[in-house]
Each structure stands twice: as structure tokens, then as C-alpha cells.
Amino acid sequence: MLSIKKLTGIGRTYRHINRYRQILQVIFKYGFDELLDALKVEKLVAMGQRTFSGTRDKAVESLSTPQRVRLALEELGPTFIKLGQVLSTRPDLIPLPYVLELSRLQDQIPPFPFSEVEEAIQNELGKPPGEIFSEFDREPRAAASIGQVHGARLADGTAVVVKIRRPRIRKVIEIDLEIINYLAGLMERHLTEFQIIQPGRIVEEFARTLEEELDYTVESSHLERFADQFKENKMIRVPRLYRDLSTEGILTLEDIHGIKASDIEILRREGYDCPLLAARGADLMMAQIFEFGFFHADPHPGNIFILPENIICYIDFGMMGRISRDERERFAELLLAVVRKEEKRAAAAILALTEHQSELDRDRFEREIGAFIDRYLYRPLKELKMGEILQRLLELAVFFRLTIKPNLYLMMKAVSQVENLGSKLDPDFEIISRARPFVERIQWARFHPKRLAGELFDSGSDLLSLLQVIPSEVRLILEQTRAGKLNIVFQHRNLEKLLATLDRTGNRVSFAIVLAALIVGSSLVVLSGVPPIWNNIPLIGLLGFLVAGIMGFWLLITIIRHGKM
Image (cartoon, rainbow, N blue to C red; front, side, top):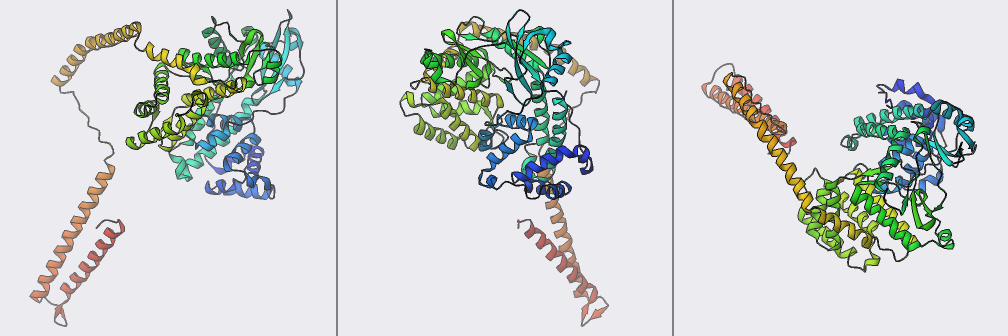
């Protein structure tokens, strides 16, 4: 597992001084030095100003804050790029403009030398490339933050691609995670708005995500599961995995030669049926979501090849999404309610798919859903864009502070990407028409006799198990009661404010009683003429009135300060 060391003092941050200096340089370059001021990292700020004075790019000042964040993350390297990509799937954590901007992060960095490729293959497979492959390209086909891809041929001449993890990338990531975790702790300590988000928890979750990306056996499992669910479908192709040549740091796959789905002109020139490809692509995505609940979460055109006979081939299974049966059914209800223009059902479906902590004005929410339907859905079907509809619903949910689960947002992004590609392949493409049979099918499946019987059987089994347990549990309670060992514990929650108010009220009442007694007692002393006397007034009574006046004035100031009379 990735190691995240806890930094407890500013002095320890100099353990990786060069990396800190690089990070500070980028922070100052993109105009985020105020953040370090807010985090009270005086020593780091002073070091940054002394070392990087005058390095800020004036062109950056014309960019929006989300754009500057994206560019800064790209420049900071692999760990920060991956952090941005993870945050781009979390509209529940960061504002929507940042989500949209971070989704544009580019994961392209220079390749590492071929000598390191040979070293990695030797370490992972136990042999140098020359003893495993009959041919191996020295120049990579693509390079990214975690690894790079080389073309090769097996001993029998089969063309393959070999994905190789960057050497020492784990150590680089661990150093960056240590720094990120330290900054996250400062955010929780000094920035009130981040205390609710809990950046430290996000860093831990991010570390787990990175651990999966660093382990190519996870991607291997994704590929095999994806291939298994489409094994009977002839209109899709999944690259073959060579498991004996794949490890945690090496992934060997069949080399697929096709046309990228983004090369529309080439596809048309070569005689491919573009409208058919658009329809097939949409059907495949709907099947992934509504039938299997396991879908390719990054189906951009660069990850889709088109093969002869209009066969679609997916590549790169590093980012996959999962959606439960209940979530599929609720999402289907949402789509049907929106298309049928039923705002109450649409509002109920959105609330079932989201979470909210604050009190929700349901009437206003339903009115906003109705206004949304009036604005976007009274159009010809060919003008309706599911991506736009889902985006506007997402904005509406964010406005009402509804939390959308990351897997649902991944699904929405995937649908939007497929719709955009389909519209380029076929100007008359209607993804809602392609989705409707799947949505209706999943709705009818809820009432299928086999499923109803299964759910009834499950409920009966649960009830039977409960009936079997109840006698022994009741006997245990009776035995504990008879033996005097039964303890009932009452736990009071959220009573602190009430107790504090009662305590303050009691103190004021006691204070007022003492004040009244002091006034009455002083009056009796004055009337009785108890010596010593000054100007015919007993000094003890005068002193009592003075103390009472001070106490009364103090009580009045305290009440006014708390805003309650």
C-alpha cells in the first residue's frame, strides 16, 4: 500500500526540500501564494518569495481560478494530475466550475528511457525483452503519468502492446502524498470552509485510488470482466489479455489495429456506416449501465477503435464505473419522469439518487424541476441532448446542496461522451431514442414474476431467520433481567446547546436573586441607621447599594452582549 507519512511540524517539511521548492514555484507562478498565507506556512512562503521572486507569468492573470488550478496541477506532475482527475468526478466536494475544468486535465508527460523499460521488464517478468519478445519497439507509442505503451511481437509473431509502469513512480507519489497530506492538515486547521470537507479523508481516499492505478492487475481484472459480459455480442471487441506476461507493473494486450472513433472523415472515406456506429455505441453504453451495472467510465474517442464490419473495440480499462441495481432503477425512473414531464416523480427520483444534510424546501425544488422541464423538454426529440439534460439536473442538485455519488457522476459523464461522439458520427443521432428501450426494460423487469418471487423468497428467508432468533434472544433478556444484569443505556444527542442555555439561564436567575437580596438588605440597613454613618446614611447600606448597582449593570451588559433581553 502507498505510505502517507504524517508531518507534525514545519521543520520536517525540509525532508524533501527540492520537491517543496518545485511546488512553491508553481504555486507562486499561478497566483496562489495567498493560500499559503492563509495556511500560515510562513517559512515556506518566505522561502518561495526568496527563491522565486519575479517568476509569475503575467498571462496567467487573465485566466479564471479553475483554469489556473488545472494548469498548476498539470505542471506539478503525475500525482497532482491524478488528484485533479479524481476531484473532477466529485461534484459533492468541489464547485461545479472546477469539476468541469479539471475534467480537461491532460495526462501527457515525456517518456522514460528504453534502458529503464528493459530494467522494468527484467524485474517484473524475470527476463530481458529480447528473450520474451521477437520484436520490441524502442520508441513508445504513448506516455502518461503512470506508465507508457510500447509495441512488440511475441515469439510466434503475434502483435501485442506492452504497458509498463514508470520506474520509481511509487516513491515519487509517496513523497507528493506526504506533502499533500501535510497541506490538507493545514487546511482543516486554518480554513473553516474546509473543515466540513475534511481534506485529510480525501487524501486517504485518493491514495487508495492511486494504489489501484499503480497495480495493473486491477486493470487486467476490469478487462476480463468487461469481456465476459459481452462475450456473446458480435458487435464489440475487447483486446485479449496475456496474463502470463502481465504483472503488477506490466500489462500485455493484443495489439488492435483500427481507426480511432474520432477520425470521422477517415471512417466515411473507408466506407464505414457512421449512423450504425453511433447507434451501436449508444446501445453498448446503455447495456453496460442498465444490464450489467459495470461500465467503461472514460469512453472518449481516443479509447474507442472502429474495426472492419463496423465492430467497436474499447481499450484502456483503467477507469471503470459500477452502479447497483437500485441505482439503475432509480436512474431509469428519473429519465422516464423527465421525458414524460412529470416534475413530482422527477424530483422524487433525484432525491432518491442523492443525499442531503440540510433541510430541503421540497415545494421549491419541485417548482424548479417544473421550470427546468418547461425550458428544456418542450422541443423536438432530435434537439434533446441527454448530456445537457443531465448537466442541468446536476447544477440544480448542487444549487439545492444535494450530494451526488461519484459513481453516478461517472455514469453521467460517460453517457455525455458517448452522445457527443454519436452526434459527430450521425447529425440525426438521438440518444434518448436509443436509451428508451433499456429504460423501459429495466422498469418492466421490476415486476417480472421471477424477480417478485425471488424478492418474496428473500423476504421470507429473512423473516424465518428472525423468527428462529427471537426465542433465544427473548430467553437471554429474561435471564439477564432475573439475574439483575440487564442494563438500559439512554444516550442523549445534540443536547449541548440546550444544556448550555439552561445553565446560562440558571446562572442569571441566581445572579438576579442575589442582586435583589442585596438591594433589600441594603435598604433595611439604611432604614435602621446601623453605624458607621456618613451624612446620615449608614456606610454598610451605601456600600450594598453600590455593589448592587455594579452587579445590575454587569447583568444588563451580559444580556445585551448575547443579543437576548
